Image (cartoon, rainbow, N blue to C red; front, side):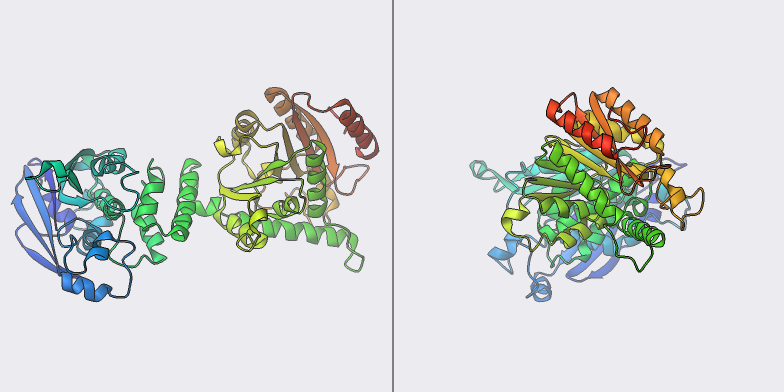
Length: 528
């Protein structure tokens, strides 16, 4: 198994700097022990203008079988055919990827203490792999071996030359094998990036590993793929094949990669984005504490504000006749649980940016134990509401329950367009705190927002102005309603806006809405 890395240079920036980057002296031949044989590093050429480092991995087939016995082969076709006669000693597979990590670990980390800053500077690189296997059950469906190499490496800035190797040159009618000769070239690339990409993409091309794929492989994938995998157009394919199609691990990796992509797009840390579960729990506890302080611990507890909010949302959804509902910013799935109890809601989509929130929602809803017929009604997906998403289209209604106040105000127009402009459901229900009611919370200091993650809170006039502006901009009508106990002076603790696309309410519905508004809406809360 062989691989070479070449670079060019000048007298001011000699090509032999490759030795500093790899932490391997060009004048020496070095040998390293690996779990399945020996790795040798040497330099066929080393000069100021051109330098090539070669890695030769001498795999012991007997050791490979002995060490792997009983551990599984993750679907490797070669080991299914023969244990002792196979391509593993010759083809650049997961064995070479592991050797890269063993031999060039420091180089992969982008560390060069002898020449500070050298590892961060891009340089010309040329990488040659004489035999790279492209296998797996779906390799034919996913394209030819050469096409696969182009799909994986070209988006990363490499010029790719992938030549299919015939089964037998003496019998061309037999066609090509599943192996390619791969040559990668780049005018400017960081060596550390190149090694990390090879570490991930070589096993992905092969579609099998010589060792059992354990849960810690997800962490290895995300560490090596940091900065490039989340935005790769073939991210799903790479993840699936790297993890040898272990679907539970693939799903976990995909969730974390999507979170990384969304965090990068918002210029935030992933931990900042994935904070919904803790915040939702804390927010609910704060609301309950505030209600208990106001009502007294010994009194019989009426429905909590959260329960009243869900009841009001369900009533609005039934009013517009919604059967297919998207819960945008679903958090821990409380509203989804309420929707599933009503057979009139035939399909429910829960969307949240937080992986932890979705995991908690799935656990609380007991999706894994749910009857098949019921499970078909609900789907949880990860996504950011400030980006257009084709998955949000086609629903009868969308719900933003206590969501908008968690966005920075400059980001709010992006959400408005994604929901009202792009997804454009016939009805949208939005709830948000009424800032005017905060003075009634005795435990809430003056001037404080109800929750630390709230970016703003609007009073009734501000919310109405926003709702009417959005409705006018996107062709909706809007009805503002109070939720929770009414106060003659400051209104209700929560405010709800029911948006309808165009004038979809029938005359009977308008009459019913007007009657409801007359009896429940405070002064200034008429239907618009």
